[in-house]
Length: 370
Image 1 (spheres, rainbow, N blue to C red):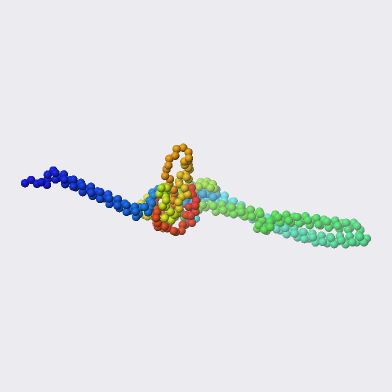
Image 2 (image 1 turned 90 degrees about the vertical axis):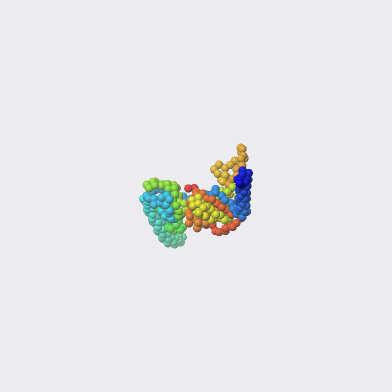
């Protein structure tokens, strides 16, 4: 007996049914995927913005030489973590020490000169007092001689001599008074401590002491040493760049967002971030601090000139500054320049928390040059 199930018509029909079922299954999977994507977009996707054009930035503290000298020792080196106030470079102190001793000697000499002026003023005042007493006696003598001469009891020559003595004493008193005034003006109205020469010597000593302390160059903040540009035995000048210190706690993220996607971004919006350094295993939390004052093209070295030549429209990007939770930075440190993936909540939640003072200062100023 011949079976009809193995005929060519039945086999082709079974294959067509199988293909039809596969197509229906594929269509169902596609529809289910579209439905899931639609639900995700309605519930999640339209409420957040994801950007991968984001980079870690931070304050870069430049360490410059404040005085000239020869490098004696370098306790710090690249990649080393240093505490605020720890020495980075030590300069030889012979020249600064000699200048400090010279300034101390000049201050001591200025103080002695001021005290000498005080004694001269006192001596001049005493002499003027004695002259005034002599003048008083001479005036009384001249008055008696004039009275006697008018009565015919004495000669006119004695009265004339007495009058000359009075005038001579008056002239000496005037000269001594002028000398005392000149010494007082040289000393100053504030006494020996306020004498101009003493004040100048005091300032010179303070400057010499400042240069003496500046021979030890210390770290301005706690951070990582980078860009070492000095070696032992090198002569350095004031203002020369020696190091850069990067504080890893003073870190933020700048996300460059297209203008077409910027409308829903508001300061205070919650942000989740992922770094390519740690991958998706580590999630950072932060919030939007503010939006840039213009697109990146406006602040470029060569800004666009859209009013000249042929014009082509390009979608611009605006930098958005994002603060990162300090606790996350302590657990998983970041370095300036690393790339980040940023997800910004467009419809809340909003984070209202205080911003550190250093962050406010860095937000108001441009990024320091390395």
